[in-house]
Length: 327
Image (cartoon, rainbow, N blue to C red; front, top):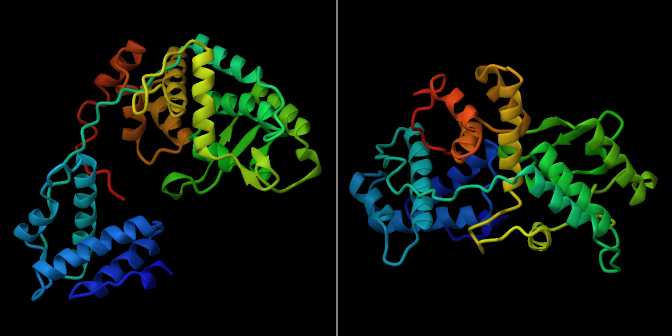
């Protein structure tokens, strides 16, 4: 067990371990990386406030103040950890100071790439040109249908790669997304055309003889790695004549999800659906926790579909207050 391997010491040791177990009881993973972050916090508190369990403003700010040559994202993670731990101590009756959630707010300058319909067709066309490869015998079948699912259903790439044979209902055209981000599950309907394509793929790769395993497999029981998908996707972009700006610049695989959100909402608005009704439907379909998450997908691309942006201005003006996006 991870907690047994970490030597929590000092006055806060038991509280820190109890905090990790508490978060896990709520359904959060708290993997080795997060446990080490709590261990680092425990060491700091035990050294700087050993005599009394408290989170004073001086102690908290000493922990979260930006260090030399430190990235803003690293500082943000420390703010998040100590805020979460502080909230936990507060429930136990201890005196705490909580730093503002935006004390070290990470700048979000990245704008997602919205693929045109012509670009989507070119990318899928390049995927369909793949030929049989001995080291990955099904790859020439996998990539075309995988990309069609990403662009047509707005799935996260992690969700698509976790699909099992049982999760893909090719008779009724339904994808079952199980325990995805934030531990949510949902049903995602597919179009008739995509359902038919899934049936053809299902037969071609030999899934008809098995009832268990991943829908997209490198070999029996071995799913595709996200890194492999990213590398191959870059290859498709290049051959489709779509320039890539380098690491951190895009276009990305995940932008297929942003693209789906924009086109889906645009379609609903053009069909005459009230924005009040359209956004919650899209939010549920995409597995977002809040309407704000879905709204941001569109707000991030102001140059696209100005009719959506205008439709959202008044109904959602002031609806989403600034709150911390915390677990």
